[in-house]
Image (cartoon, rainbow, N blue to C red; front, side, top):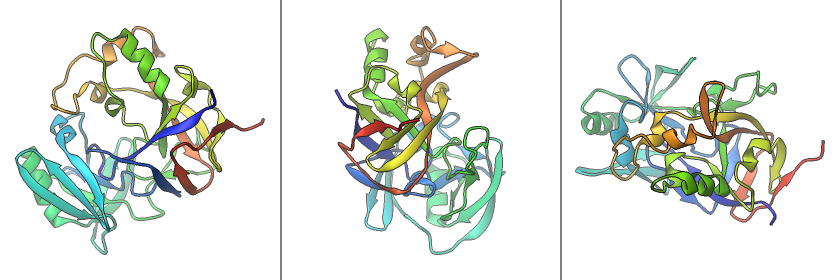
Length: 266
């Protein structure tokens, strides 16, 4: 069976609910509107599900020029996809230091109430963001507020193989990929190399080492041991557990479900 694009997900606010689409544009930073907003604490440090699993209970919808966010017990929040203005705010995302736009005071209050601690929403303006580690992307690729790379790709068969080994199955939501591939053998993404999705050229540059965020149930916000414990029995090397491939794109364009995924010669 030929490889094809089976699902497209973007996450407008880092560590919040995702949006599934049938077609979407890739811009210079990745999927348009993917992780362009991020929560930071009073020191400007990124706030994620790793420390705040309650964020997994949020659901996100794109409606016109706004993002609508819902969470149990809270009125819906609306945030602009792209704020018109905002003061510059310093931020820290892992080892990267930069700035974003503090463009939603309403969002600041909503998420502070949700988490019970003071946080701010910051936005990554077009063309800015972090430079991808040149060890993996010598062409100076940039990304928004992802964990370092523009795209994450996983084959559907990889999840099937993991679920075959688990005491109870999990969904792809636990791993939050941007692109899911059909027609591949389990873990075929490990060997993608240079490839195309439709007409858009991409390169798989680094495996994705997984953290405890994968053990948060996206329906309840509860943390457990799986699927990380089982993954570690057959996907652990170099002291880390691996699932999925970080990918950089070498062009822009529109992706759509069913697009062929083809290897590039050479």
